[in-house]
Length: 161
Ligand code: SME
Image (cartoon, rainbow, N blue to C red):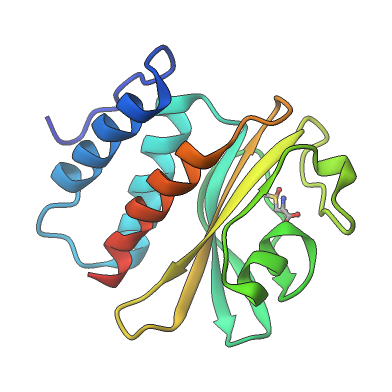
């Protein structure tokens, strides 16, 4: 079953995530390369749910700078300083941020004018340091909630294993 994209759009979110997590584990079996994992997770999440933009910003200077990593969607900005925008704030505070309306978030970085809401989840590596953030953007307002937070935090726990 490994290298196929499941269509999760019509499933209840929690069931969709159960299927997605199982699929990610099966697809990444035997893989230890974090970049390969970021690319695979981006593709499965993005096409499985039909998001606007799905991808990773990697920490390239600790506590200072994020740089774009594997993603799916339209052009992502290349670098984000810690503390800037939703991604930089989630990285600096090392906590998941859910933004129901990006226009109401001070300093939101617009890469695609269609973006309306987003969730950003910190990704910790095996050494316990911040490795990246997972950023998912939607063209719908308030597209993400607690179910997404819990499931996506479980998903990115792959990088700490
Ligand atoms: N939404 C992000 C910027 C990155 S892109 O949307 C791909 C932010 O404000 O951090």
